[in-house]
Length: 273
Length: 343
Image (cartoon, rainbow over all chains, first blue to last red):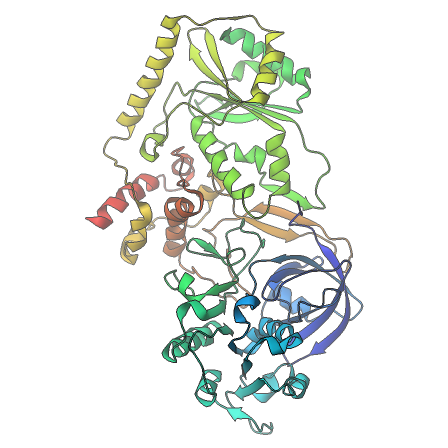
């Protein structure tokens, strides 16, 4: 039986500063970490603490792992101080994953904003490996301003595929910043793309308010509750359903999720908080 | 099988002296001048303080199976071999919940599973009732019917021994070498049954005026005002969760050195009554108000645990009532509330 508390040391070989508050850490675990896209890990800064993060790289790469992290609290403050060459620790992987087998042959819609793009990038890159298995992939990504846009350098690469669309929107463009793509809320992008809701999956991740209104819009466009996949990231402390910090009623975000379909959790309390 | 109480107490002292190779012989012992009992390691000089037959001890058995603070990584290589004597039926119920939560999930809590394996549990029928006891309200009994290795029922100067497991049988064989035993007479059997009945009646008496609801899921529908009212004097200290035999919420602290490559993780109890519980980076928390946290605790015990474990999380031990700074009969209030909500 695997010890769920086991910490795998990881060598930090590169840091990409995605935006003023968001950076991607590129890690090499001491032993391969086989996760499925959508699952999360507990990343430790030694002596400081750990927090739950979903890898943002394809699950086909088990030797290396990217984790995209926004500076918002105590641990992430220190995550933003580590340097290439440092050692961090990882426990996991934990939780549920995106059921790729159910997406095959479908028109897949991915909707995300802010740092919520991290797990979606993992899903997207994993799907790109076998992109012909999917009828089409539409990825709508949002950010507050052009400066807050993450994975900037990858967009042109992602747009090379025939059956893949990658759309971006920013909420606003402050003076002095340049932007030649959409300026609107990310949920408004749904109006611009030709949606084929019927029986097709939509995957949503982002700030709670975006997930709430994103879900409402998708329902309006005819997506079925059981086909809307939400990444419910809470304070998953232990990762394996024992500490109870991430409970949503009778569910645990860490072991029953973090990937839930909307129909499963719609009656639980405070899901958008 | 009957054995003399005096012989059994002497045998316990022999155990604490090294017989059977137990690292800790844990027995309820009278604390100070009052009539409460602490589960404590038995020492020669505390032999007279043993009390196996009263009501449940102040500290729950979870303290010895799932300690308040424990290094979990790197995990300890060896765990002590313990024997706990005088465990009450309510605590056996609690162990059932801990087993479901910590052993039967997707992951096994490594140190709990080792301590559980290494611990022999000898339960004992209750011969007294505390004013906070209310196992009768949650479907419990003041005597154990399963979940023990051995069980003791008091009759005159004797204990009747009942074997509940293979581990218990082995222990009994060790005991047989030291203690003389005799068969119980039908009269003695009847006395034991009568005594059990007497305690059950006392419990009903202590708890008269309170009723039990069959379906606590209705608690969810109670309005916010009634939770505010119920938690009016709650200061969110977390005593109720720390002493609760079925609470197992944890936090994991990183005790590695900064910049070190050796990781150390330490698990401690957490409490859903504390503001920082479930707080996320950036300061957001799903339950910022005391009454919301209070509600969460009772829904967890009476509703969520029922859905997750097919058993409610309250064993009726009454420790939370005793530990509460306010000393109101909160649990009983809640048990009644489920009824009120649906009226």
